[in-house]
Image: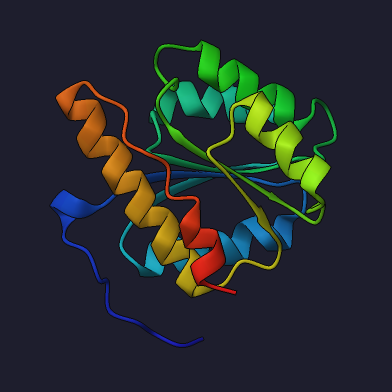
Length: 154
């Protein structure tokens, strides 16, 4: 394993929830976020994600669409309906990336939709968006979404 220094201070550390039914995906993404200095929790089922999200109050949720119990779209709707997580930055991580898939994600309440695999450059962009959302939440406003970030990193 390659060791990287943590790149954020404790004050800049974010809470991240990774939800995917593939254990390897959650493990790899967890390690990447932890190496960057963030607090990470993971879940493999939608119902567990909802429970953990209420406990963690995450700044960023990476959420697979095809979960074994309830769909990621339904999880996103529940997260948006809960005052604790309503303003969390939620990103679909999935293999489904057609224009219709992206539209379904956006209508379910996702802030962004990314096709797997997700590399370190995209993770850094997601964190920047989560930081912007956290700052806006502290000010009581909702920032613009960083959708152009998806195009910037191929």
